[in-house]
Image (cartoon, rainbow, N blue to C red; front, side):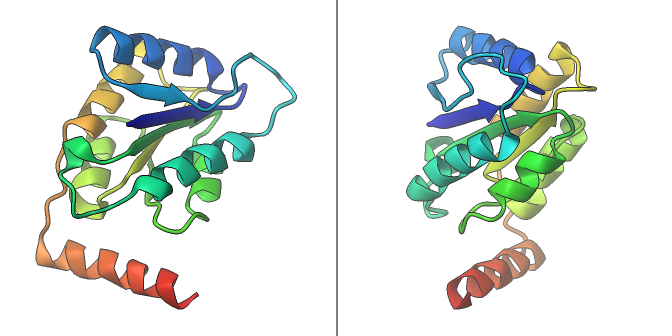
Length: 156
C-alpha cells in the first residue's frame, strides 16, 4: 500500500500524484489533508503517513509488496524531519529522479518527500515512478549502515 499526505504546501502536487497513481492502478490511501487549508501543519500528515508505513514495515518482504509513503510540503524538509521521528522510517527528500533512486538503492528509503514549491508536476511523477520502481541495492556497506540505525532505534 502507498500512503500519501501533504499540508497546504504540497496539496496541489499531491492531487496530481494521486491522479497518476490511479491511472497506473496503484493502490494508495490519502491520509490528508483532504482540503487545501493554508493553516494546516505538515507534521500532522507526516506522522500519519509514517505511522501507517511503520505499522506494516517489514524489510523481509519484496519492495513491491512493502508499504511505502509519499509526503509533500513546501520544501520537503519539514515532512522528512517529522517522518524520521517514527521508528522504522527512512524518509528522504528527492529533488529529482537520481535522488529518488539513490534513496532507495543506498538507504532503503520507505518514504519519499517532494517539495511542492519548486517541483513541477512532470518531475514529481518521474520522482514517484523512480521511487516505486527502484530496488534496494543490498550492498554490504549499505546494509551495515541501515542495521546500525535499526539497532539504535531498538536501544532508544
